[in-house]
Length: 74
Image 1 (cartoon, rainbow, N blue to C red):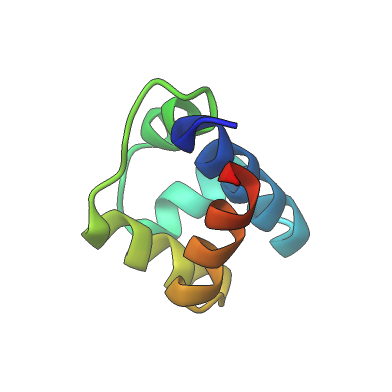
Image 2: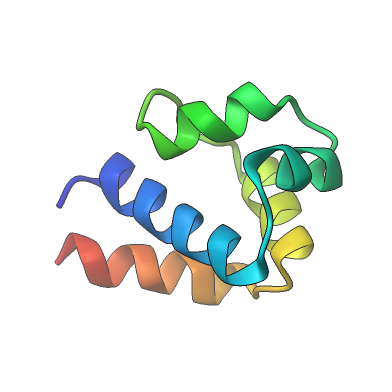
């Protein structure tokens, strides 16, 4: 699996587990909803700052988030 696809999969799963819509997650991260949508559709690559904001909003350790992505890439 490619990096963008793995990130999109992990982000969508974590967001859904948290019970958040794309809009709710975007609001909690202080970013536009369309950005979350583009990440989940593999159209954008997040900065490390955005990854940390999303992880904070999702109550997930960034290292765990990255590890899940890494496991999907293998």
